[in-house]
Image 1 (cartoon, rainbow, N blue to C red):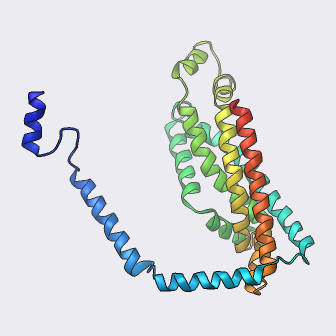
Image 2 (cartoon, helix red, strand yellow; image 1 turned 45 degrees about the horizontal axis):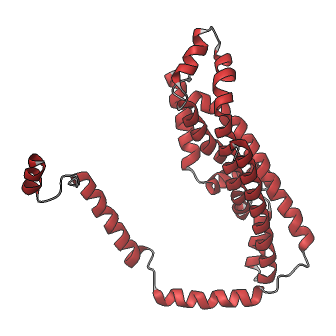
Image 3 (cartoon, rainbow, N blue to C red; image 1 turned 180 degrees about the vertical axis):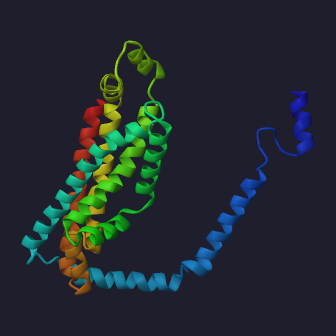
Length: 272
């Protein structure tokens, strides 16, 4: 007790308060400068322009209500393509993430070179936004849903690959060592120890990826990757705001359905 009081008297602060390091102070200073520059110079959040934007938003809503359903057939057809893009891209991405995660998990990776290469590829997939992947695949395979499916696949590989690998690394080492001691092959360890234990985590992560893919598939259409995004971009460009509102409401319904189904599957898997 006396030693604590002497330390508090010497430092001028309670013992439980740690003095920030020089690196922490530098980070705080840099972050503060970025915020100030963004507010005043970079982003320039002007209250007057925000007020004007609110009035323009009111004009948009006035022109958009009631929604125009004259082109509901083509809109639903494009929406179906968007749903198919999300489903196919997620399925392909999850399937490719399983072996990728096995290579990227330190406790079961066959060699450090495989581990390093797999982790590097996951980092690339996660670091590049799905919109950029869409642009890359539009250049590679041309305009259309195929580019969207490929972009979603790579994006899901980055998401699921990382969390699958972390789930595998969190396994009890004794379980894997016990299987190896019994003479189980690498495939046997995966089938008997990794997959059954990590399956609930794999499923929940895949459902989160599906929710994200449902939203990404809409945005990818804006860069020519097919789906409802093209219809939305065309309606906004031609100032057909009532038609655009129909598209937006359709997208909202689809995304909500995806989220509900995903939540139900997660609850069932986790036994809630």
